[in-house]
Image (cartoon, rainbow, N blue to C red):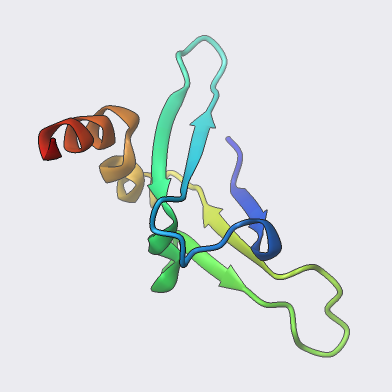
Length: 93
């Protein structure tokens, strides 16, 4: 299983409340797990949703937001499952 997904900060403005990241995780022989993640989750980084600036001496990577994916924290992603988010969108109408 993939353990880390990143998006460069220059391409993902977390202050835009209408911006979402769509994440599909594939596993052989299964339908993909689909997630819709609001950009605002990176305003309060945690063990799953990380904020890396790479601004220390010797660090050369572009600043990024990331998602740490592991069996240990996979449950945290559950509230962002496609079906749950779509259900929430439709109930707001």
